[in-house]
Length: 257
Image (cartoon, rainbow, N blue to C red):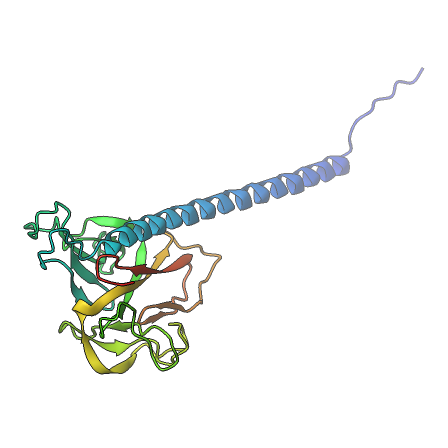
């Protein structure tokens, strides 16, 4: 009786190896894609948490601007710039502005990692961050120049959002240059001069913009959007993912209805 032996030919082995390689390659690509998606989601989540923290604390404290329970007259908005705001709050309710920065708050951006560009939101002259990876910060101010308890409006009935462009204590520039009630890419970032300058002690509301970005760029992503951050129009054209938030805050201690 003749014995027979079953086995694989070289061609069959090569075909099996090829199939295994294709399957393993597909599994690896799927793993890499899922890993990348997870890392992107982690970056975006971290960015959103930073942004939320910055918005929450700024909203809470700017709303308190001018808090003066003893009616001392010592508290209010001290500076109303396009990228920073400085104001006092009587936290201890004694009628006197505390020394240092306990009751004098300055919101602005600083260079926390010392790389030559501002990247963090802080509430003091020192660079102690409230929120990291904040690329841009913008402000505009609504005012009540005639003391009627309502924000001043333009001829179209829209709130006038202005800034103190030169730091002299007077609002002088309206950012809504096309008078459509919205500050957006259709407005000239240089603004338009107010017919009459307005003392910053008539400010009753603050509009803020905060632009956050991820801590690392994504090589397969390019952000070509234009972000309007107050009087800044920013088109980054890079791999960072970003989120922009804008909030209007009424200063409830400054006499607005």
